[in-house]
Image (cartoon, rainbow, N blue to C red; front, side, top):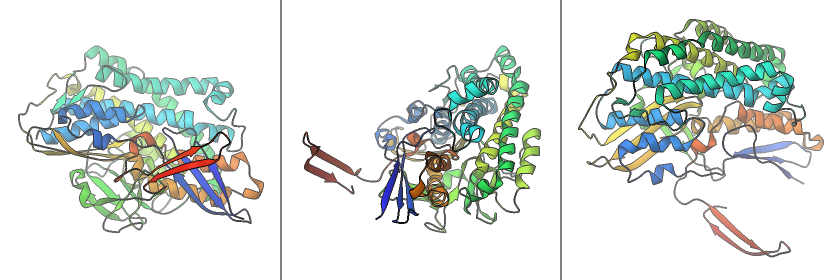
Length: 476
């Protein structure tokens, strides 16, 4: 008889998800699904708010990457008031963004993904976690903490607080950087890059020593998407056109993010509240793509900072076309980590970073704005429509993790079919399935919204567990 194996909750990710693995009578996996059951209604309950409130409201979507939502929202508001912020304000926003990248990428690799690489997928779960890393290698654990702390300090010093900042406003920012603050942030950068290099060496050593696993572990073809510099095609995290390539690495589109609805559509399945974006011209599911570090490095032609670009060249040499195995996401993430630290230095050394010319005033309401940014977990779109007074009438969010939804679901099924034997089931087999999701560093709190009514099932049971009544709305 067929059976169902449930993993609930998926561990070492942000948000809540479960996996169901369906096996046949021979113990072979037939299908596997990642279910995202939590629901966030930000798109709906932001209606009626004033547009300038959105950079303060939307960071509450997530406590892990509030900076990404804050800045994407501010960029959408810039368009609503029809202005471009002064260059110093753009530098300060990007500096804040680099702090977000450093703290998020460093935390994910060392604290969430690292235990699988350091201890192995089959290690005792009691030690296969951040506490185990602290006990096994306290020096490495301390460096990881310092990296995240540095990223958080960049955010705090630039914006005035570490989380849910009120820094970026329509037309610019509301706080300048002092010379003392600049020097405080410049001082530790070399030390931080050194720590990142140790993480990079650890990841590369593991990937090279475990190529058999790497090639069997959610290795599949897809399109890729990310922002690039419009002139050089270099990796871009704050601003630039959206580049989309096909599974062979050929350019499909390079477009202004404000026009994203001309290129991206969302597919809905009844077993998840998380939608599935895809490239409209190819349709579903042919037009699926991946984002985040693997996607960004696959679409980029180079990286603008020296250390990260040298490592980028080695990354590109792995494959003649796009680098496909999902476990290379960790390698790509650490390359971006180094880039973010190097870019932090460049921004701090720019003379305009200390300017007080930080806002452009406007009395215009255009009625619509789109903000696009590369969050740590991929391309993030904020789109707002307003009335003539600036009151929000409609909101659309395509969140970074949502762009990777198909990739995570596909990875779960591929890894389950490759590594799970239901007749000889071990915890390590199921941990591999979870690791397929962790590779994408999902932020599920950010990314869930629904069309129409949410499915709802209410069951009333007696003291003995007997079902007395069952009420159903939508698909249960």
